[in-house]
Length: 330
Image (tube, one colour):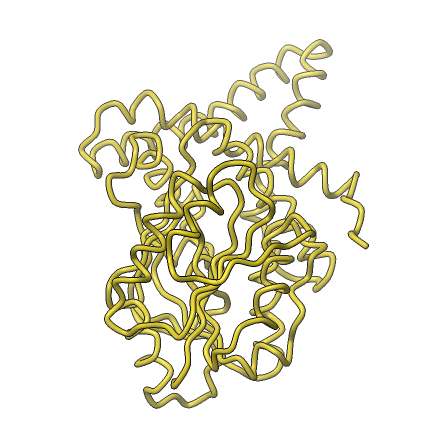
């Protein structure tokens, strides 16, 4: 690839944008340009970006999709590479991406992605989020979570937006990014590439280190936003939702009806105890396993709470978007 544009959507990322840009400066293969697309941050994000040799653009849509739609037309590269402002790239990141594109493939590859693993010096809560993700009930069976923990080279069905490179001419075939989607604009654009017969390749050496949510509030908010995005994606493409995504809201909603019916029958109360006991047991087992796996005894206390938080707010997101869908932009 003779020219590479690195695009970084940002909004209030003053705590991480500097390390992100430093990591791009340190690449073994230098990009042609770096473009920061900001959503009118009210902190020092833009001021920090100005310390680096990069182009700064602004988007009005208030979403990552809008930032992508502003940045791609302004980019000059044959290769369009995305990284999030709260991520840092390993020094051979771009070099590994280019090598993956240039390797022989049975199907034309339109996108190369790679692992987005734990941020350097990650906080205790951030590490706890990673521990939750790396469980079946935390979602490690999904494509995006697999990109965190499964480092084998392979063809995949999607690419996380924090680490995704596209051949420009193929990306332009499926542009624009859907600005009506809250979080799944990356899944959507990748799905459209697959429908055109292109492949997405996971290159294990193309590593970025991605910061996890740093507070309980941010963790809950992310769970809800991603649930909303899942329903939106399903509404557009009639795929992308499965039983694993729907179990938490089904469990909690049926539990409410069971609790209401306890007043009618004693044995229903016994059934409720068993019903929720099964959930609590699965959370407890997962927490114990992760405490041993990560050698962190404090996880015995914090992971059960965080599992419950994540599942409950995910359920809120699924139910909210199902019955009270967000209004489309524009």
